[in-house]
Length: 221
Image (cartoon, rainbow, N blue to C red; front, side, top):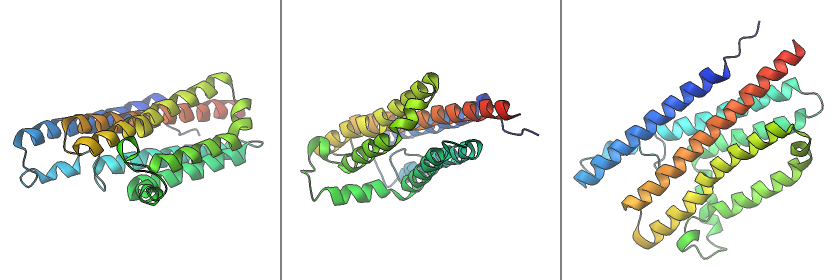
């Protein structure tokens, strides 16, 4: 019996939860700047998209974990390309741990020894990760090239949404933090957009994977 939940139900549930988190985050930030007293309004950390070990971080880590699991399922449905799918599954599992443990920030601290960590390079973690993405793309070029055009373009779009947030707006936020600190409204705007794009990029990716699993199940049924 095929028990995999429908793609629309998965995407709808995850999207609603993401929107609720973003809305709560925005409301809390508005009140936070209104009160302007961190001691009185310390529980903002529980819903702040930029903070560690809170509900939004747990949700983002969960999205990576779901992606990893779906990629693993695809590896079990493939014969020729199962190694590529399992490789992606491992990468997303690492990213799930990274989201919770903030490994990229530790890598950023190490990268600071090799670059001038000022202005747009104030958070230099993205340099190491950009190199990693490029290397992975080289290894997966043949796999992506053999993919169906629709699937490939969908993968690219989800990656662009995610990377625009994770790197694009993170760089903008880094410059704002360096020039004016992390306590400005503009900095909060940047990281709100950043984290929102990351979440919806992942949700779209999950949608793509769910659709692929459904199609492959129909093929072998």
